[in-house]
Amino acid sequence: MLSDLKPLFRYMARYRMGYLWGTLALMATNAIWVIFPKILERAINELNHRDLHAPETRQIILIYAGLLVGIALVKGVFLYASRWILIGISRDIEFDLRNDLFQTLEQQDQGYYHRHRTGDIMARMTNDLNAVRQLLGPAIMYSANTVLFSVGALYFLLRISPWLTLVALAPMPVASILVQYFGAKIHERFERIQASFSEITAHAQENFSGARLIRAFAREESQIKSFEKANREYIGRALRLVQLMGMLWPTLEFVLGVSMVITLLAGGRLVLEHKIDVGAFVAFNTYMILLTFPIIAVGWVINIFQRGTASVKRIDEILKSKPSIDNSMADATIPADLVLDGEIEFHGLSFEYGERTVLNNVSLHVPAGSTLAIVGPTGSGKTTLINLIPRLLDVPAQPPTLLIDGRPVREYPLHVLRSNIGVVPQETFLFSDTIRENLKFGAQETTEAEVLEAAEAAHILREFEEFPQGFDTVVGERGATLSGGQKQRTSIARALLRKPRILILDDALASVDTYTEERILQGLRRYTRENGGCTTILISHRISTVREADQIAVLIDGAIDELGTHEELLARGGYYADLFEKQLLEEELSVTG
Ligand SMILES: Nc1ncnc2c1ncn2[C@@H]1O[C@H](COP(=O)(O)OP(=O)(O)OP(=O)(O)O)[C@@H](O)[C@H]1O
Image (tube, rainbow, N blue to C red; front, side, top):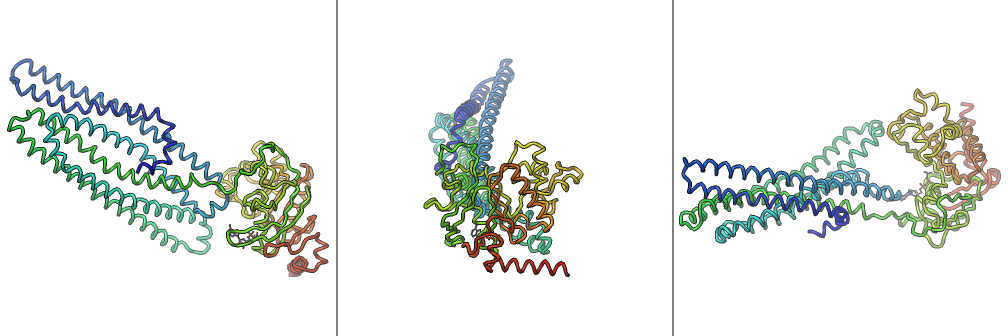
């Protein structure tokens, strides 16, 4: 059981002083509370021998009443302190864990997010984290409380009458067996509940993100139905746990009730036989009553504990995941502010997704400052090829098949490599922030003039300036309030602001018309020239985008099929020339049409 908590030990160790003080406060609370029945015993015995009308009787009653109130007050102060410290620690650890989870998730590569659904990750960061916090706070506190009070109470009970203690506590092993039996079942059911909760969170999250598609395909009804099904499953599983808990608590209470009956019968007899006095009998009963909550709490703690350990496992799975793309082969002598020349070489490069080969023996040399265009049928591996450059995907380390400025790409520390590269991905992602903040995302230290210059180069400046709030316009979640073309150009300006030495555009002009495309390409050339030049890689399905490139590579089924300039490839009469013919024809048709 305790080994399930192992992942939490290093977090708990940070707060050992807090745990020490919290435990001391808890010990003080119980030490005071456990003498409460003893005071009661004395009071009763004292009054038993007194004359009701004697003047000192009134005084004695007042003294004992004051003593009992005083004990309750002091106990209250220590109880407050122990809760404040121990529950506070659970909040501190929750804070640490949440930060660590976020940090681990931030470092994961693309593949991780393909394997895990966002909703599942969110469920672990909320629901599971909450279960772990309850385990670290209330569960630890109540178990310590139960142990401390039970030990103290047991000492006094034994002193009153070992025999009575033995018979009164005889049903307790039954309680312990019940708790163990139910505990294992609760754990199992709770794991299923959490998996189900992840499922409905993921379902809801995907529906909100894909709201537009769902409306367009009029799939609301079926989505509502499948959500309802998942929700029903979740509630069903939760109810099965409630059923179990509903059985556990009354059973524990029944066992305690049996103890009380035994105490009354056996204890009453001892009083009548004058083996114990009335005061001791009352104290014994009071101990049994005061023990009720700590023992009932055992059932509750078991529940939190089982939930918590199931959640620790789910959280630890995230914490343990190591990003497959790391700095393990980085050359420590490379300075953090290294500026690359931007020469790229692919040397017989092959790449597989699992079993499936997507790139096959690709060899290309892109001199620094030149432009390489990649064309090819959809699914031929273009995006995969360019994702290897900033190491969003990794090629096998040996033999080195991808070199930048003559060095294997893995030798560059990731942040050095990536800070030299500007990527405009196929799918634009914008944050629900202002246009200005979205543009400055990759280059926080830029001036307003630089922002305007990059927007101008991406041919979007005028449109932004015409918005009522200009660059301070908030773009909605994922840039929802911008058009597809505006989003793409924002994404281009964002990449340019990094003043990259290697600029990668993955089909980044697909959403703009050919006129705007021409203006953007001109803007890009001017911008990169004025900012010290850069190596550019362009993926496109349009001849108009790629024709000016220094080299054009045709990628078919993961292999380079043709390589050359626009004229050379036209002369070759292959895929490229075919594409050119078709697009020319389309253009003519659209003009005459
Ligand atoms: N994460 C992945 N896991 C497994 N297979 C993948 C993954 N990403 C892409 N693929 C597969 O690899 C092949 C190449 O994909 P890639 O995205 O590189 O093609 P592309 O040439 O850029 O296509 P498009 O022009 O449509 O963007 C495709 O068949 C695709 O199904």
